[in-house]
Image (tube, rainbow, N blue to C red; front, side, top):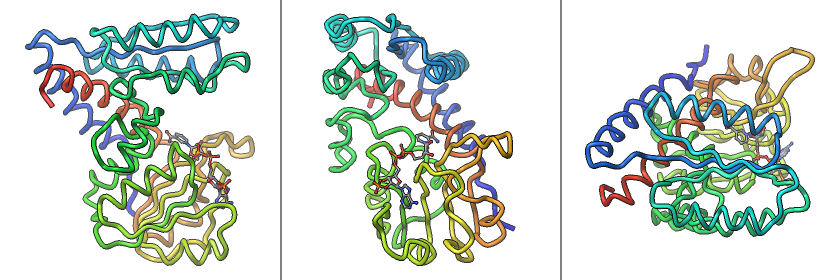
Length: 286
Ligand code: NAP
């Protein structure tokens, strides 16, 4: 049976560090603050906003909500981003995307100051990940994969790591982050030939394909570490499932993240840790 790499203990460890850092910041008169910018009333956004706000409350991080109606104009949103960039009392900004079609979401994304880009959406943050320079912040889901590997003491150096997916949100940044940890990387996508064979040859596998239970028994080999980033609602099972067919992978591999209760739960804590990190940087403490 595979070891289950649950997210909860990782969250607990990240939260403990956040709480300690917040105490130090508050002693110095700094209250770490996250601004959440939302346009419209998309249920997914509202649900994430509630989760993030609750988690922030638990660890002593303030939340400032900037909410616009669905029909807001571009100039108003751009002015809000500009205000948040300039507001010394705001340390991190989370912008819900995609934005409504009449808005230029790309202009909004690029207007955000990478120093406050706790979600890793700006070019500055992505450059920081690629150059391993510490500029901006890594995309939270990619970092959540790394936090899980680190928490469970999984050594990456010299290992063959294969990533299924090449999105800017997960696949590409996690490949760079694993390379920075001296793993040898293969990145797969829809045009990859012999995908199952390539994945089976890896020691560490990150699956971020966005296709429900698409990675099956023939992709896996004994002893592998499998991080399943996928989050998909299965009508058939009436629950969330990953991109990996868990029941087929689990008897074969060495360790695997569950869905739900794996990468997803760690992602929110990573984004809050970025707010605290941004506050520390702004206070000259990091
Ligand atoms: P995405 O933008 O749709 O990218 C999917 C990637 O997987 C693409 O590069 C695509 O290749 C590749 N791919 C798709 N089907 C494939 C297949 N059958 N074989 C090989 N490669 C395949 O998805 P994403 O935003 O990276 O998200 C990936 C998954 O992570 C989704 O299930 C999403 O719900 C989940 N997610 C979870 C969190 C979290 O907090 N846990 C956060 C974000 C996303 P091409 O480039 O060739 O099209």
